[in-house]
Length: 123
Image (cartoon, rainbow, N blue to C red; front, side):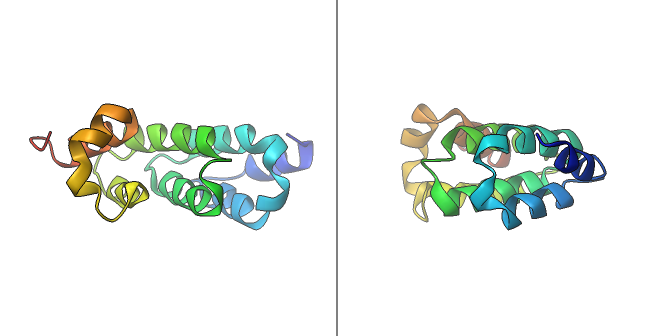
């Protein structure tokens, strides 16, 4: 990552600054997306901005950002112990995700982990 960006994001106390950088520079971050994701994982202790970043990248181009999205979601699941934010990720599997729980749980570890965390007896 460029030193000035690294210095700027190094001051991020909670993930908001990194999320804002991601959103405001989306057209120029492909070569540093892994560094941005790593920084956000390091500083976002609640998972709030990780969830926002996953949803944002999904909306921009879910195929292009598939790997970073998956990594962000996995980290958000770990960090959101109070389950305040991860429920918002389920809509990434479609508005009808509840009709496909068994199918998605079998195919996608992140979906299974989120659903199990939110609905402990649901799978």
